[in-house]
Length: 126
Image (cartoon, rainbow, N blue to C red; front, side, top):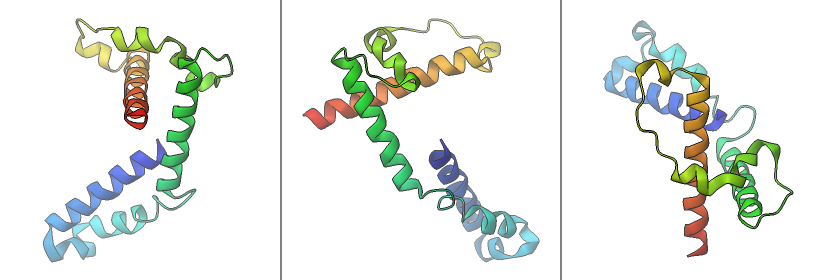
């Protein structure tokens, strides 16, 4: 998540700075100090590209284990064991109050990770 959030913040601040034209570099705009701090974050504590590649490798490896029914799967991706159930579930009705509930957010995150990983594995096998 560090890689995704730091890139999002970096590119978002850069777009704001660019939309201000030359004034975006001025300290009077208030963007420049934030931008100077944020520009380092994608590289500090591990370069983002390497972190993303390591995470993808970990997810694909564990998804493969789950697909083959192998018991040696990380506790962090144990939900992959039920990937077919996760991908076939439908959320019928969501209220605004549900969106901020940790259980609901976790369910959505698990679905997204499972879906993206399964799509990536299918593309790699094609």
